[in-house]
Image 1: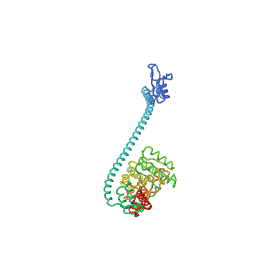
Image 2: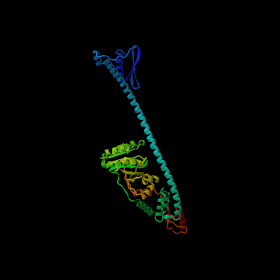
Image 3: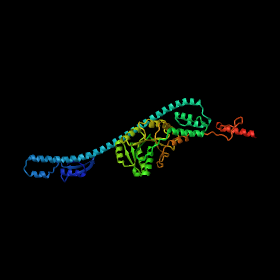
Length: 448
């Protein structure tokens, strides 16, 4: 006896091949699955050759006397057919294994691609942060040098005593030196503190002007800005506001090329709360297809990532010339950030939106740029909650927020103040509380 090994796609085919090759009395020793194929081990007699069952056509032709050539050709065709069936089974199994290997390779390649994309995104974000810090340090050095020169000039022309608290508050606030110099020069000659604050408010509001734009209510609008500005929350607020007016079925949100971990799930959750559709596009071609499918919607909002802002905006604008691009900045953004996205932008923005107005107390950098370069103002957020909605942003609101954030300390004085000679002081703001207390005690002693 000797053992023979048969491979086939499954156990049934392997058994059929064993019976076909070695007869119905073949002894099957074992069967197992090897590398995706079914292996059958059979025992046969020594010297036994596989029996090939003749086909009906061969048997019919063998009964005739057509010669050995025709029989040889027929036998050759039968052998080729049997070998082809066996090879097909093996090829099927090999193909199945190759599919598994290809799938594993594709998954590995996909994970490597995602990892490289994440590393590239982190590199771009890190480079932007380094550039921002470097520019901020350069701006601080420039401001420091300018402040030294201006302090020497301002010491020669002291302010009136009534507005000294306001001047001190302006000096302590994080106001750019050039703007602070103009504000101090504007109020230094005034004699009333309340009047000085009102004049300061009116002067800033007039310098900024009233340039406004409507809130996004119809068409396609892209919201962009630096990382952490609150773009996704602003998109959710605008979508909720439009859904309440026009209906949820008329609003759609598209997340474009945002590969941050958890970004897609976050915007999905916010859109589900607002009841609007949310879609995703990772390249301009997909975005163009989605915009074509959403052409019947009243409002389409596009949420963008916080890295490579200008590149993403150019890609979005290449899809359609009717897309309005809005810039979102925190109200207390640094001067370098404001200049980078507002002044140095390659294309003008449709409007400027502001976030964190509930937390910001020093929007001076934004005010200074808006005084030099008027930009239409549109939306503002005053709460970290998406359910609170957004309001219309105005220059008066920014100026009010800035002046309210000044820590103006009013001098403490007594009801009746006198100098050392016993004469009433006409300007009570020049005396401190201690001086007023000493003056009252001295007056009481003289009266007794």
